[in-house]
Image 1 (cartoon, rainbow, N blue to C red):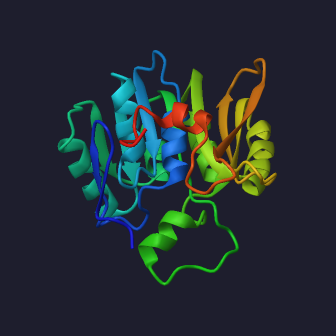
Image 2: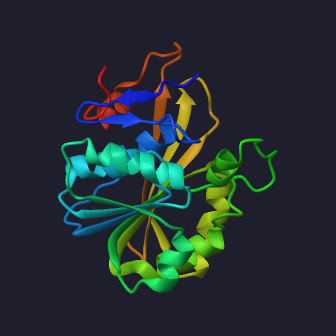
Length: 237
């Protein structure tokens, strides 16, 4: 059973009220995103607030973290308030509603989106909302990003390999182009890619890609590359 809290080097995530707990996907994405000179950042589906807090650790940008689930929003707000960072605002609303009512544009948008489309749904309704993309379809996500991302902005997300391929094609049709790709494999002795971390921009630029392996052939022995990526966050690195 997941712990009620998860401690990082500079903040603690309480997660007893959240359907989706701290997981490798969120930490990978939060560590991989490069805020650079972003002045305002949007975190869609913030859950516990872990990605927003990871970005606050390396950016002074104003961060708006939103979630459709009320309890997750309360948890994320508490986690932000109890941290040393004061640049995070948490709001309980859907991305569709935000995109429909706000004229604000963001330098950086990040999301660890729901992606299950045809798997069995959990009996836990809040977990279902967090994991199934009928509550935030790729179409709605892309339409909202197209409206709310600054013309020179960057859009980051993580998806399983199959869904990532579908999303890339849809994004291209909307005028969002993949500029950076990180392929993730769990083990060094496996050729199966589990996740794709992607960066999209409106302007077509030089494309770069790389592969990250999380564990060596020995379970729970992490690769140097994974440690290097996440060492500013995990206590044991």
